Length: 88
Image 1 (cartoon, one colour):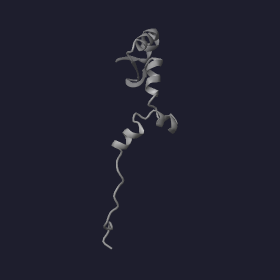
Image 2 (cartoon, rainbow, N blue to C red):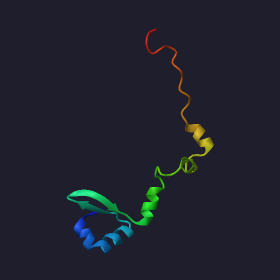
Image 3 (spheres, one colour):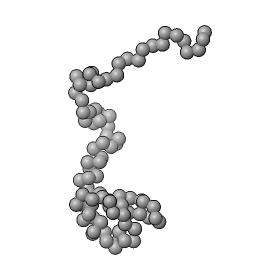
Image 4 (cartoon, rainbow, N blue to C red):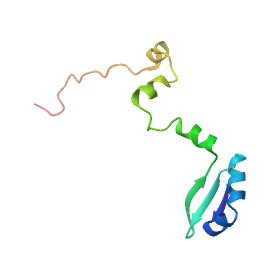
């Protein structure tokens, strides 16, 4: 990933965008510190698919396991303690 200074990124915005569209994210640094990454719209959408901004329903619809598969790997119930935590 190439890193640009802000002034250089401004001067070469077309090059920054062309590289991002070609699938190579471009980092832009401000005052010597990494500030932003420029990516293509398609890459941004792919990244957003796993974003927590989805509703709970949308998240469940994208769950990778079927109900039966989940039952095979789901943790079982937590057993209750037979002794009290503190000696009573």
